[in-house]
Image 1: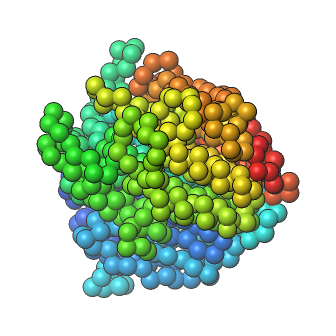
Image 2 (image 1 turned 90 degrees about the vertical axis):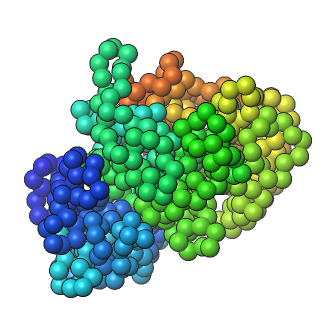
Image 3 (image 1 turned 90 degrees about the horizontal axis):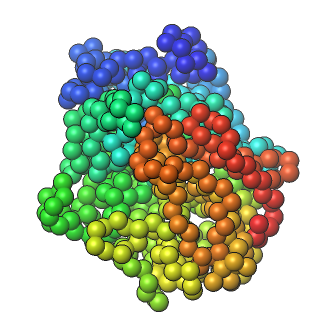
Length: 527
C-alpha cells in the first residue's frame, strides 16, 4: 500500500488520497470547503467500513454538498466486474454523511469498494470516486484472525501535530494488516479544547491543527459533529479508515468527562449552569451515528450501541456500553445495586449472548477496566468512575453486577472469555484469579489494557483486590498528561491461529514495538 504523494491509479487508496488532498487546513476552518465551486460532489473526509461480517458490511462517506451515495464493489481494484449499491441521499439533516449496507458478500475475501457521489438533480454528474478495501470474516475455522484495539483520541488538548506525523499510530496499526480495529471509546474529546500550541517540558511547543469547533467545549449538535470531523483532518487516520474496518464503542468523552445519565452541571464550568448531560448525550449520539458506520444505532429505536460482532467461527466480540445505562458515580459502596454499570437489560443480554456463542474466543470489549481504581475526580468527593472503588473485600456497588456476570460464566462453563479495554491512558495486562480474590465464585481470566491513541498519558491506577487481579505487565509514565510527542501511546494486537486456535495478545507502542506477549489456549473456562 503506497503512502507516497503520487500513488498509482490502481492503488487501493488512490481516491481517498486524491480527495483528501483537497482538504487543506484553511478549508477546515471555514464553513464550506474550497472545492465547493467545482460543480461536482466531493468526499474529502475519506471513507470508512464498519461492522463487517462474513457476508455483509457498512460503508460510510461524507459529501461537501447534497449528493446521492453510490457504492461499487469488486474482487479486485480494477473494478472490471463491479456490483453497484444505491445508497441514501446525503443532506444537511445528517451533516451530509451517509452509510450504505452491503450484503451477500463472499466470506473470507478481500472486498474492494469505491464510493461515488452523484448530483441529486443529474445522476450523470459524479465526483471523483473514493476507494477503500476490507476483508470479510472467514466462514471456516482454519483461517487466522487478527485485529487491533485501542482508544482515546485527541485528548487533553493534544490534537493533530503534523510535525510528528499526526496520528502516526494509525500507520503502525495499518502495517499489521488487521481484519478490523476495535476502538474502545473516547473517539473524541467533546469536553476538551484544542489550542494552536501547548508547552512541552523541554520548553518547545506542541503545535496543533485547530478548528472553530475545537476552540470550546461541545454543546450543540454542530459542535459534536465538528469534533468528529476534526479527527478526519488527519491523513494517517483517513488512510487507515480506507484499509481497516472499524468496530466502534463509546465512553465518556464523546459527551463529557465521567458523565452519567441524569447528571446536571452546576456553575463554575465551561458549560451553562443547569446543562443536562442527557441532552448533550442525545446530540453526541446523533453525531456519533452520523460519523461512524454502526449497525445497531440506525436499526433500533433506542439507538443502542452495545452489540455482538461475529467474526467467523473463531471470534465473537461483545461490544459493551458502560456509559449509557450506568447509575450515578458515587462512593460505590452500596450492598445492592441492580442497575450497576451495565444496566439490568444489557447484563441479561450479555449473559444470553455469551451462552449462545459458539465462537472459540469470546472477547468482551469493555470501555472501562474492571479491577483498576478510577476515581471520578470531582473535588471534595470520594466518588468512583469505573467498577472498582478500592475496597479489597466482598463485592460492593458496581462490582456486584460484574460478580454476577463472572459467576454466570463459570457455572455455564462458557469458555474462551478475554476482556479488552482502554480508558486509563497506559497499557497493562492483569490476570484475575479467585485464589487471590475476596470473591471466589469465578474462573480465572485476563484483562488487557491499551491506549491512548493520541492523548495525554498517565501513571498506572491502583488495583482493587476484590477479583484478585495481578498486574503482570504495565508501561505507564510517572508524570501526568505526557504528550504524544514524548511517547507513551499504545495499541494492542490480537491474533488467533486458525490451526491451533491459540489466541495471542501483543501490547505495542505507537511505532509497533512489541512490549508484552501472552498466548492463551482455546477451550478453557479459565486461563
